[in-house]
Image (cartoon, one colour):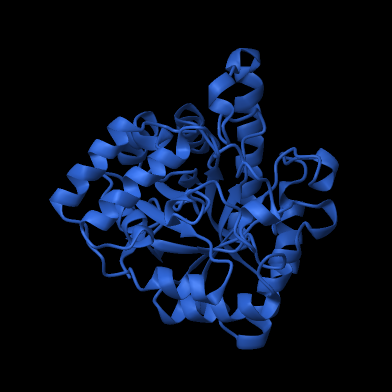
Length: 347
């Protein structure tokens, strides 16, 4: 497993990260425990969770239970010191604390709540699940309108949150700070404001990124390279689309389409299955597994990435781990680029 530094923190992580959002719903606890053991054995020491998990679906009564599950795994196996642990505070969704969101007045309380659920006294990477001013992620880019934003209110909110995060960092409760579903403007403001108030510098941003979703490739990529911000790419398999299991518009038993939304969070468009087929054809042409192609491609990008994958079952995790040594040739990458030009942003 490859290694990289998380931003400028000095914290080293595996360049694949175990996502846990199905732990406790689609993935039973015993299977989740086994997956965390398998990941560590394979050299993956970076785990990501969140206050709002599990998902498929998100329910107010299950908020926090994924963190609790991980806490029980720590307690059972004594492996906390082997894991770089990331979690996230929920934003203003009505599913999470009645839409309370996060801010200067409650962020330290939210950290303490996550610490209790996780059964640990520190969080390696504490992230904010989405900016409180709104986000263009999750297909909102098609109608995104930032004209109602108040710049000063946003900056003041950032300053207050960063001051509180700075106190938590000094107390040893968190080691580093990251964002999720954030823009290039937002990332640079978090960095600038942190310098002004003495808060923790932005180390990472967790945004969707895959062969099918490449919003990150321009402004965000430039920000990441110049500011040393690590991308934690979620949905690198495009919610399972890039495995090929949904070709023919099917709904496999036990899949995310069966358990959650049939449109895969807006990903099932008229153009997506032909786009997936183009990448499946590239993999077949070179005798490669499409899952391994999708993950190996993440390692070819010109900015730092730790790709967050989720596996519903141990069998899926084993399949994915088998591709750790796959490297894509220049010929494969040329064909991937051609497929992307023919099928840009299919959702």
